[in-house]
Amino acid sequence: MNRKRMPFICGNWKMNKGQDETYNFIHDFLKKVKQVPHLKEREIGIAPVFTSLFIADSLLKHSEIKLCSQNVHWEDSGQFTGEIAAPMLKEFGVKYVIIGHSERRKFFGEKNDTVNMRLKASLKNNLPAILCVGETKEERESGRTKEVVKQQLLEGLKDVTKDDILNNLVIAYEPVWAIGTGLNATVEQAVEVHTFIRGLLSECFGNGAGDVVRILYGGSVKPDNIDGFMASEEIDGALVGGASLDIESFFRLVDFR
Ligand code: PGA
Image 1 (tube, rainbow, N blue to C red):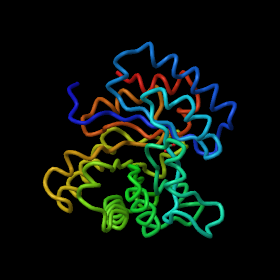
Image 2: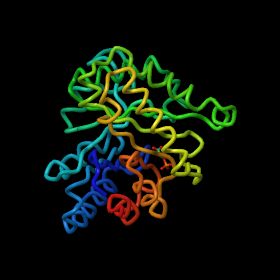
Image 3: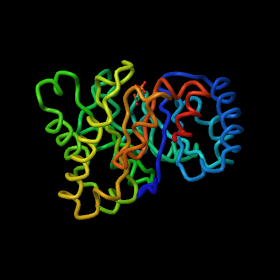
Image 4: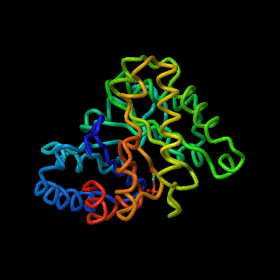
C-alpha cells in the first residue's frame, strides 16, 4: 500500500524488563531488524522503564529505532518526588514521550489538564509526544465514545500550536476495554474513531491537520491481528503493550504485511 504517512509501531513495555532483559532484547531485536531492508520505511519505537533508558539508548543510538519514554513531568526540575523532566529524558536520547496512557489516568489520577501540561512541557523541550485517548467499556456502551475522545483531545491539546500538532504529535486511540484484555477493537471500530479524530483535528487546527497527524491504534494488538489493522489507510500504526515484550512477536508486528 502506498501510505500517506510513515507507519509507526511502538512497544510500550510498561513496568516490565530491567536492565539485563532490556539489553538482551534490544541487542537481539536489532540483529533481526537489520536483516529486513523494508523495515527502514517504518518507524519503530520502544518505551522501556526509566531505569532501563540508559542501557536501551546505548544500543538504540546506533540504530533507526526510537527510544521512547512512558511519561514526563510538566516542570523542568523541582519538588516532584517520583517524576522525571523532559530535559532529563533528552539526556538519555529519548525521541518520543507517551502521554496520558489510560493506566496513568486509571491508577495515578491523570486528568486531561495534567495531560495537557505534560504535553506542552514535552513539546517545549522539542520532544515529540504520543497522546493517548480512548473510552472505557461503560462509555462505549452508553454511546459516549466520540464525546469522551473529543473532550480528551480538546483539553489535552489546549494551547498547543498548530506547528507542533503538524510536526511533533502522534495520537494513539486506545479503547480502555481493549488494553491488556485480549479483546481488541475491530478494524471498523478503530477506523470509525480514527476518522472522527481526523475530522476534529482539521476542524480545530485547520485543513490538513487531520491528513498529516499520525493516529495509532492500541489495545490487544498481536501478530494475528496487526495485518488487518495495517491494511486500513486510516490506521498509521500501533501502540503495543503485551505483544511487544517478546522478540518474535514484536518483530512480527513491525514486519506487518
Ligand atoms: P496491550 O496494551 O497491547 O497489552 O493491550 C496496549 C497499551 O497499553 O498501549
